[in-house]
Each structure stands twice: as C-alpha cells, then as structure tokens.
Image (cartoon, rainbow, N blue to C red):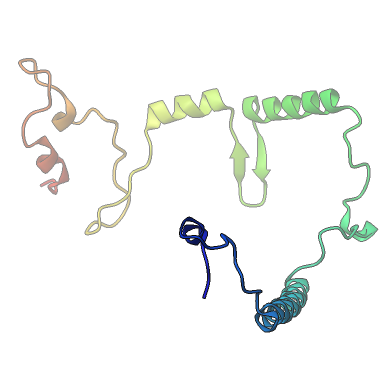
Length: 168
C-alpha cells in the first residue's frame, strides 16, 4: 500500500515505503530503446527512398553546367550604350522611311505618319457579312445611324437595328 502526505498527519512516515519495481523500470527502458532504434531505421529508410526518387526526376542543383550549355561569348555587352543607340537608330529608320519587307511577295514598309494618313483617307477594310459575297465598303463612322440628332445629342433610337439590315 502506498503512503502519501496525508498519512503523515495520521501518524504515518510521509514518504513511499515501497521501492519501485526493478522489473517495470527495466521493461520501460528496454521498450524505449527498441522504439528509438525502430524509428531511426524507419527515418533512414525513408530518407534513402526520397533521395533516390528525387535524383531520378531532376539533375542535382549544385552541379556545374558544362561549357556546351553556355551561349557563345562574349556573354556581356562590351558597349551597351552604343548598342542601344544603334538599335534605336535602326528602329527610327524602320518607322520613318519606306522600304521592302519582302520584295518577292510585294510587301513594303510605310512610315507611321503616312500609314495613319492612309487609314484616315481610306478607312479600315470591313469584313463581308455572312450572307454577302465580295468586299463590303469600309465604314468611316459617319453613317446616318451614328450621327447624333440635334435635339438629344444621341443617335436615333433603333439605329443599331438599321445598320445591320441589308440595303435595298
């Protein structure tokens, strides 16, 4: 029978009079040691499996790439400001002068200002309606249905319906 502090008040010794069981302490220590060894082997096996599967999927990160994987030299710009100025000069020339894009197919390059003037004069090409064949006249945005009335300042009601109706 175990004795506790309340036994001291009743005239008891106030401490445990029985020793701990050596058999139980030894069993607990051996169980902890065996459990620790099992967990260590399980973690080592898991680490080996994860390392093997990871190396199959990708090359190691710390491997130095071979010389064949680098671009040809020089890999740095020697004079970046001069190269940038040359690039801008080339782009400016392409945007402001006439020239051939493909001489065999007849494609030419037109300056941006001239191209904008041509679009204003001729308009953009429109797609033919699904039932019509041939090219449709380009829309300029000044059709009757888009012109606002003087009273309201908005296009007439039903104007959208009239623009899609076939002309007679």
